[in-house]
Length: 218
Picture 1: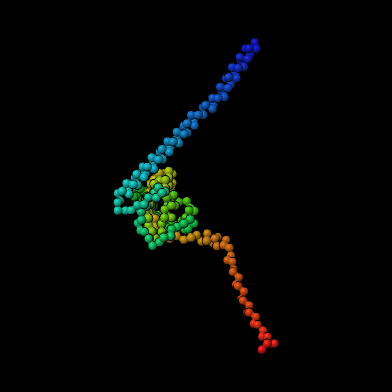
Picture 2 (picture 1 turned 90 degrees about the vertical axis):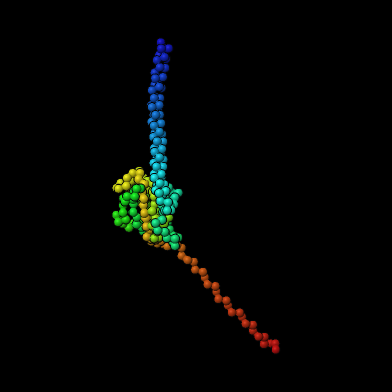
């Protein structure tokens, strides 16, 4: 009788142990599916970037008289008007004043200069197109530059929620009219400057004592 009870308890324990393992095993396919999805997504993005770059390179090849410059950020540009007399370029915190026109990669106007109007941009302190954020800092006053932006340097997979669709490459022409330091930043800097140290003037040398004549000697 005792042996029968022991056998029943052993079977119940085994069933309980097996049932506890099932949920853990059931989660494994989810993990695998997630990894597969991420890999497929990465592959799609690589293919998308490659296709966009191929289209841009064809545009560049079709205009052999135009000098295009490739950038480490993955976009290209050429000078419509260049100002070689200027060497200074906008830096972080400067206020840039510019005009721009935005076209799709086939050259159709999406936003004209008159649509957008004059632009004011606090360099590296406002959210703008990623490529333009870098491109503005490459320009000098009174220069006009045309940028060829793949979608990852433009508005990415979501577009601008208006006229620019998802994953859309853009042709953007920018004229940098001027840029100046941020007056507020200058005031903050000047307010924290330490006062100038005043160097004390050296004391005037005392006149040498004249030797008194000895009245006892002739």
